[in-house]
Length: 300
Length: 271
Image (tube, rainbow over all chains, first blue to last red; front, top):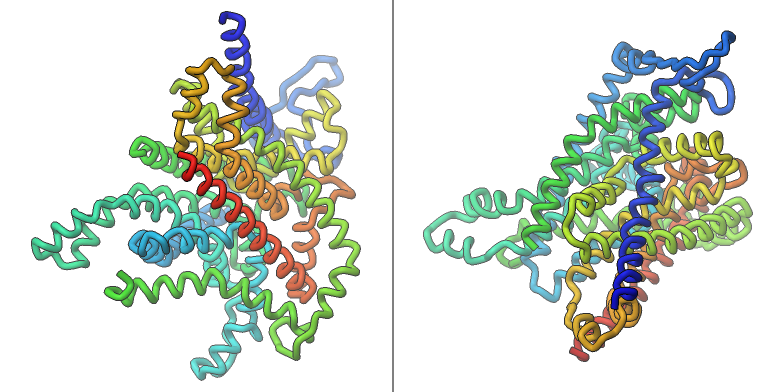
């Protein structure tokens, strides 16, 4: 029995150790390298940064830390503006996604039981098809001679095509479209558990439907609403593909800037400093998300 | 409910039209004769023919499929182990920390994941000489890191909701814990493993950003080819490719859904 117990313990150890090892090596450790390189000086070489610990002519190993990258981020208005603009785009997109996603989640949760699973599957299905290709689809719809302008002109609403593609509007459409499932799913999970008798009691006491929604449904769905909002807000902050393909010159976002610094300017240290700043900004929304998720787990 | 609320009904119609309209337009215009993607000039399948002769797209697709399959297998293994720890192990600080660590890749912007992994691979090569250069190996490792988080979510919910009485019965009858796991637990959670594997596969097939950071010369994946051609404007060949991909995904989801449904029925009738 003892030998058997030790084999089981050995097995349990490895089951626990393997995920820790993998995530530690490929997820946590890389952030330390981002921090390190963000303090390095760029150079024209491969790789394009200088080591922090260098040997000078006198043979002494010296640690050279360069805060210049961070200084540049806070002095050049381009980077501050990109950060502010990213927060703005992420916030407005989150609100728009809630406006479209909330009625959908509510409708699915209130639908007859046998309808719920197919309706939910239809929300998830687009998530399985290529993100890049779904964003690409909007180019054909939004461009000047695209489907939307053709339809609007045919219906007589406008006389000349309006510019939508390569504007901020196109970026919002693309983001809301791509991230809609992330807001609907957690909202649905909280709404479907909502106790109907609360609403019935309120209705019996003469509470109008709008008030029922504002006083009962909305507060009770708040954990799902916040979790869903963070699932949209956090990744959108670093979004690259949507602003790059649908946005125009006025579209300024951190993710796109990082891409340019890295691939076009080959400035790895500056790109790392940008990544480090973005990470710090995202800590608060991430903690909020984890808090809501843990609350949901405890309810289960 | 819908009869009582026309607002809710129209909001849902709008929502689903919003989700599926663009995909539908891609499919319709892939059969368009004209190179101008949005001007209809008659039915044609010529873009599918051109797609099948495009060696660049075909070799990139093959590379992506190989990476995605390898990634999905690693991610399913790691994700399942993580799910077991999170559901079955005692609640400790270490477990909560793993819970947070594995939740992070789900929301972490891909530009950060890509950049940080590239810096890791470059530094590792300098220090221990591995991985020498970057290519499909580094892409696979990077993909498995974020895919395993998604597999964990899928397997975890299955594991948390499964009936444990069969396991307990086998244990009471003296079955070895490993035997219980492989003969009872694993078959019960296998639909989740299948779903997780497929999800990890599609995530990898779809990733542009992380792959762009950690790929090397000669390892151009399908999204990278699609991206560079899309940047030059709309092209009917990409529409044809999109249609094929959508069909494969729809088919896979239908088949997987069917398998899971049948399994569920069988386990229900058994109990």
